[in-house]
Image (cartoon, rainbow, N blue to C red; front, side):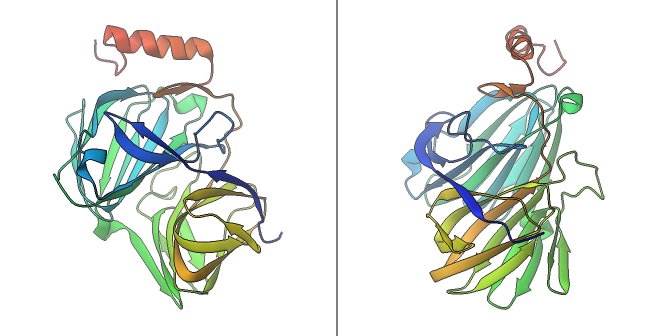
Length: 287
């Protein structure tokens, strides 16, 4: 195979979600801005509490997974199952909505910086109605690889770099995952380059959240998502200010996607059922 090329750029757009939290959305900004199995990527980033203080009050999900990764600030998760989680700097919340979950994510601070990401990953039809699940992953459990000119935090999957490897706390060896995700937070010093092996046939994107970078000689704009061609490796080059980026890879599901807000199913009829279940109190299986 060969090095992947940057074939499409999805610029993030300013929007809001929850109770008015300001954020930037790249993947998922429109129905054509998806990359199977990834549905949406949001970055929330502000030093102004007015932009995040209202948080994400209780709301439903069905049919996919949400992954919240914090860089700065603190949020608290609560859900209908009684789970609570304290999301602090460097920590991750991996939630499988399955047949239904109702949860909230609210700030645990009144001032200071709040920065992080929320990723939505689709589930195949055979798993959309499985029981909900929640994992609260502290920063200390995130695998880290240090290499000349940079570092990588591995949230999901296994990353191989030269003669080193690191496996994230979410991986198919411990718990089989249909999408076999690789989720890496990559930091590079100025003018450094790294070659990252990825599985051929998996879809891959890179989101540049800090600095300057290029892939295969093509510049990836700041706070944009770069969709890559097929291949077995990604050659990532940081610019003169260094770079911070998320690299995501996943096995495509190849099924129809029907979405209405927080519900992601395969057909319109299933969406209508999800709405009816939520309105009647049956979304989570508890009437």
